Length: 298
Image (tube, rainbow, N blue to C red; front, side):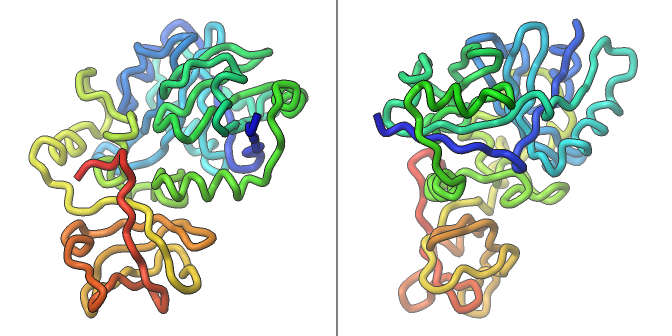
């Protein structure tokens, strides 16, 4: 077996949403259809500003009579506070449980089978006090697991997975072109339709209203998407995140996270089409070559 795993300690936190109103509470707030969450299905979703800008993204998995949200650790307190604003009289509790649970990713050709999971995105199951699920965004990213902190590593090793550095998983993510909270997705700036949420199963177009829905829907149905996040091969040293991408004297976009010769960049689609060997995309001294992943539609 070539299964590998890494702990996302310090990068991801876990927030518990419990109570009889948990489904209705989240349904009116987030971009995906919370009613579809079940013991055998997890979801990916976002919380937006009222104006439709990105605030938080997270995975939602069922565990008993509660939901566990796998979210960015550095911004978990902000997420909890924002959710609490909407609580009003809803019978829900919002509680950080990162001291109890840790987040892991497991990947490799036989990862799903070793965990007893179907191979499709979002497939989920209970596992030794926690939850395992195939990444709802893209099955090629492997499985995510929310496991008891004290036993998570042993659970995965017992199933034949070998521990590897998180940088290995991160580079795989970059090559696949999937954005990461806080690094590629910028609070109060990023837009879901520019960031792949439609193709990465983060939006349900048939559910009822949610906060920030209007702008997202307008961008889709009026074909207003002019920029996209996508992977780029980099020749030369990787510039800092936020470095402008240029095509000649014309601004073409902005670099986001990267490592080992690959990065994500938010690029104007017309600049991508017009880039050439004579007038390539550049960020600082580096030369960029966009690589459209199979899942990306434009």
